[in-house]
Amino acid sequence: MSIIKPELIENLRSNGVVVYPTSTLPGLGCLPTKAGLDNLYKLKNRPADQPVSLGVADIEQAAELVSVPNVAVELLRDFPVGSLTLILDAVQKLDERLGGTRVAVRVLADHRAIELVRAIGPITATSANHSGVEPVHDTRLAAEILGLKGDSIVDGECPGGAPSTILSIEKSKIDSTNYTVTIMREGVIPRIDVETWMRNYR
Image (cartoon, rainbow, N blue to C red):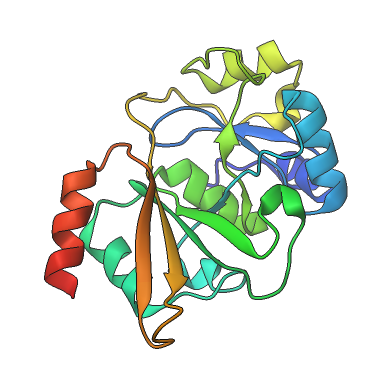
């Protein structure tokens, strides 16, 4: 039986915002539309020049929005699911609040989050809190703090812990068949582990 209620899906399709569990902290999700992002940024009180990432069920779903080179596929294969956020070239330019031509995607690990994005498609994967305010671990409490109601909540307690490690993957300016990987934020995967992986990959 699905834990994703029809009214929650309808809320998202109407450019609403929902709180859902992830493998770290509650996520705040909307569809990647202008109206959805307007509502999310207003709710979070987030500056428009701070892009948010997108959560996806798997790399195939990510490929609907971004170009996925082989190095990205292998990184996601070799590190735990949900531990990496990859910044990749957009298939076509998106809203600047999603990064425009360079979009951050995270393959989600929590089974409830995966069920949600399989039902509705990619949604934003920013933390469910007002900007600058410490996040909480329970999705229902996070929603209450944000003033959201029942049709905006996927119930769940999140374990917390370090955020995903963010990697930027770009086509080499010298050799277009090669890609460079830059560590933008060290998170649950230590910098040294990524650097070791890259040395072995090359």
